[in-house]
Length: 191
Image (cartoon, rainbow, N blue to C red; front, side, top):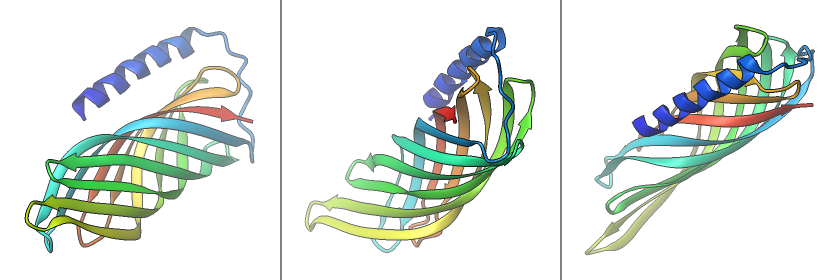
């Protein structure tokens, strides 16, 4: 996870440098402007299944896509899909995916850089399994819905194109008590 955060930090510095030096004809955000984005991230998964005596802590990658609309220039809502690649630890495996419904509160720093807080609901499906030598593969499926929260920074690269760097935390309230910490970068287009 530390390597991923270092990479994201380097990308953010490079992106900030590009956005600060570019001559951009920035169009102002208006109410009900629609945006869409795709992203890639790294996540850290920690979970424990006390019933089956399975637990681990691993890092893996994830992909996401989202669409949203601005209700004001400082507040937006968005719907997204997130697919977390398989995380594993020796003989234990976990995989998640799901849909998010969230909101962002945006604080512009300059004309081209803004900070934001983000939170919402994550409706997820998870598959967990373990390879036990004497018994074979033991698996279970879980689904649920839980809150997520985090923060990020956005950079405008042109009048319609931007980049987001964000860090989110998902605390899934299932009997296995998994926690997902996600650092991601997204490319976003405002229509």
